[in-house]
Image (cartoon, rainbow, N blue to C red; front, side):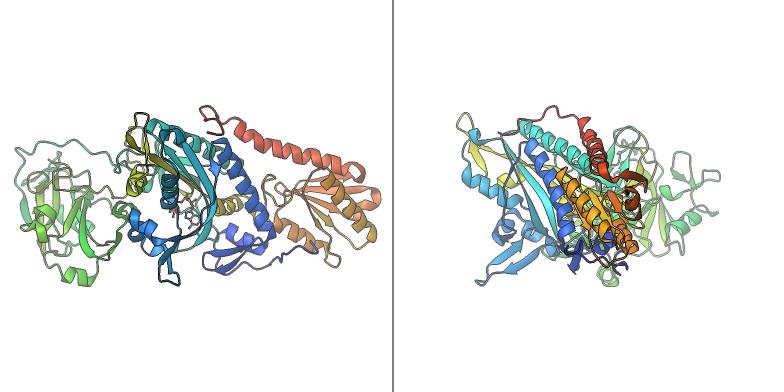
Length: 624
Ligand code: ATP
Ligand code: MG
């Protein structure tokens, strides 16, 4: 400690909100250089290296070979794939001295695909799985929580290349199992959630989310095992119903009913059409009260495309739900979505605020070519009947029937947008029960890319019959620096970090607590003995630092075992404190090293046992 490059801080950094961020800075593991950009100090680097070693080992077991690509790449790679536009402001762009556009790579599908294309010509070269542990750059809109969302961060990214879908399935499964083992070894509980609604053509994509309230991702789970990122939740589409015989729509004065709540109140007031049990609106006296679910709410948003083109879009959702902006953003990607502004509305007088209805929207409009685009929630199937705007201030229409009075969700020409909020208790799409939402951090992402990049870059090999075959690919990412933060977040208390024994910078923190020369001598000797016993040791040998400060620093730095050599030495005893439980054991100086070795070994074995239960069946041989 007397010459370790570290300075502990007593005060939390002012920009830190979550405990891992505060403690990693205060304990001198990392230092901030700029928003979302951090320097690694010796203790931090030791943890990072251990996390990387786990990732490397598991990649090797999964049959992946390590490579290393540049972070600085020419823009033309990303122009060829379309991501030069799609990435938008999230990509760090620069020019070299010859004015050539360059990129600090946010991810490397393009570079890996072209390299393999240039090297491979035959099916005999496949399958191939390669990976790197490398620095990525993304100019995140909201860098946050220290290492959790950086603008510079380290990712393990692996890419698989196979001849056919069966091969891709094998590669994907090998990565999936490697991820389960990696997160088990890091002691991070993860939930595997589906990350794509299937709109992209059946290719699989899953995220490994670590459940925690500080996570930025929302996901849902059902008791029967469905789990999906909120962005990917699929809404069950009800069966269409016949429109024949439904009563005609009625326009009704609804002054000042510009919100769903005031509209429902107006609908239940005397004089308004009455709701029948079946949900239809008919004139009459007796009925079931209208609820927000009977209304069709039309939400106006502004969509900005990657080429900067801005247009309005309207999303029609049942009025008991809001549009979920996260789901909408995912559905509209790479376009960006914002609330519509006053100027937007001024340009579209057909949109009567508070009273917007489908008849002026999308393909329903008198002139569909110039109409604002209209997207419908999947629940608005043919034969459903709605209260919605009459496109006239102070009026709504009752009993407007999808599939009769306007195009229904699923009708040709009427795009569906599954972007309404998912409410607790909504049914899982696979019938596995009610959905429960929770929050998590995305630790990893595995993705069956299929032929998207191989097509874009012409990655083809000669098949067995001599015909050219387009290679099918997968990509697989783990947030390595994010993992350090997640582990710290999970293993901390008010006094400091508490590293698991397999990730700690050192297994034992030896403290010389006192002023006597004898104490320093004994502590120094014990530190040496422990190292001789193959343990890693951090020795606080600082001569003029009080025992109290040393204890506080030891708890802040978070080594799992703290050995205190102090007053007890006179009677031949030292104290071993387990950082996590606070439990203190007195040990005789003479066999302290041997005892500590047994304790540390037991702790390491308990961690190793976590992966023993995970299946390693179906793994391909380590080298291909
Ligand atoms: P997010 O949704 O959190 O922005 P992403 O879906 O954009 O992440 P991927 O492109 O799938 O991320 O990247 C693979 C992995 O890299 C993620 O699972 C995550 O662990 C990590 N990662 C992504 N962005 C960051 C970041 N800004 N800082 C730290 N780690 C990150
Ligand atoms: Mg992702």
